[in-house]
Length: 386
Ligand SMILES: NC(=O)c1ccc[n+]([C@@H]2O[C@H](COP(=O)([O-])OP(=O)(O)OC[C@H]3O[C@@H](n4cnc5c(N)ncnc54)[C@H](O)[C@@H]3O)[C@@H](O)[C@H]2O)c1
Image 1 (cartoon, rainbow, N blue to C red):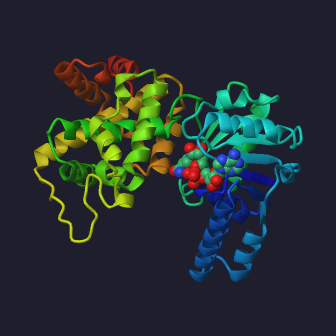
Image 2: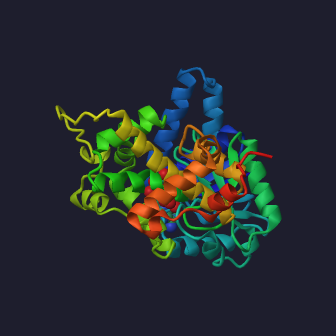
Image 3: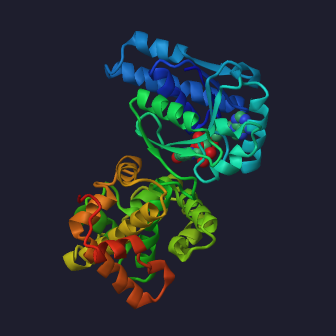
């Protein structure tokens, strides 16, 4: 399938690598010559490293790179069967691009966006033929992260969803289908991992090192929330939270934290700036966690319950089906288990009790229990039971 990619930044370059690796011919365009050069350099470096490690032969590396054509004019996309946009996250600029693309591609060409936060249906509305439009949300780095959220717009033709899903499966990646709602699956359900950790920190219940310890050592997560936020960047992570919060019309569940906002404003962005929740400068001493087991269990249970509640609510509102929700969290953010499976293990009644305890304490809408969990308790149901 001849694939066009617009935007040769980290996502566009990674998607090009993936498609070319699986035999697709790729054309890629960026408005910045520097970005093109960086993209070429990074592809060569990655492919050479794969060859050095014996994962592919030198000939394969050459052939993969040979399938990627860097172009300067949008007219070069005329015979593409699929074009994926991975440019700057700006609705107006993306819409202009799709309007222009439609003047050069064939009627059958599928147009896709890799947007993380914009409405796919809104972007589709810029097209004369919105039925050909779809969201294909890859994770970073796209070659290694196997999950792809497939987000049909309200306007998308069923055939376009099917063809896009097969294209992803053909490359050994895992498509999950998500409704066009803020944050899709992963960026919505993962919010409490950061938000509830920040809330616990803000209330002075524990420091960042202790919360991270609880989530990794007791919870089995690969990275604690503060280590992860420092890795993602407090500016980027804050913006995602703020965008989801506003997209949900200020639902208090997604309320951003002043602590993270202040860190971002101060330039304490995390690893990339040398300082965030932790200090990464040479010789810096970071606090040790307080390894009090009881406190750790409280922190882990509270954050996990909030994550489960969010996953259950996403199912309740048909954002995705049960299996896709669990797959998305395992492969999009490497959670140790699917959250709905985890809910069954803990017991749905326990999840409801934990939520109700938080509601009783705080009396905030943020802690409302998903009606799905409550109904399941009444009916004695589990997510995976017959
Ligand atoms: N970085 C991530 O983790 C991630 C994950 C999933 C989705 N996304 C989404 O993917 C998209 C790209 O993100 P990124 O991280 O690769 O960004 P990036 O900044 O690394 O790359 C964007 C590239 O697009 C180019 N560009 C901007 N406007 C253009 C235009 N009009 N025409 C052609 N090229 C243009 C820029 O020069 C730049 O090279 C965004 O929509 C983002 O929300 C990002």
